[in-house]
Length: 154
Image 1: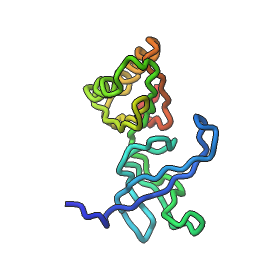
Image 2 (image 1 turned 180 degrees about the horizontal axis):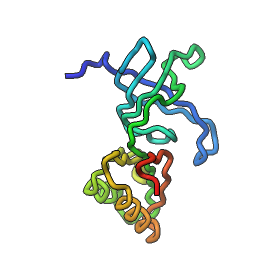
Image 3 (image 1 turned 90 degrees about the vertical axis):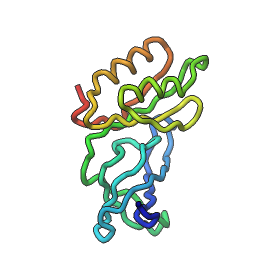
Image 4 (image 1 turned 180 degrees about the vertical axis):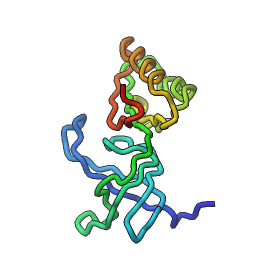
């Protein structure tokens, strides 16, 4: 069983194109090597681009932020992150999430109209992308690929 002190909260500061402003997000990570500042991300990023769950990152305590702060990614997991916005309000977000869960993708619901989804490294992204494109063409969703792993690019 993992103890609470095996985890650390890391701050990510970045410019959000969607929000058009400087943004922060905190994520939980398991401690890989505290002395070297290495942590493995343990949750799906809601907004932060260019990182995915299970990536190993370098973070250090930042005096100005007063907490552990992301500096760079040391090792990529091969997972990808896709952000989905529900455009057709007559649809239920959990039904959309379930479609992707059946294809092997877990997600975190942020609100009734927005969720962030993980595409595991072992999953063929082509089927996921086809479903995303189909739903987008119908006007049901819009989506973004803020972190698309090399193995998922076409």
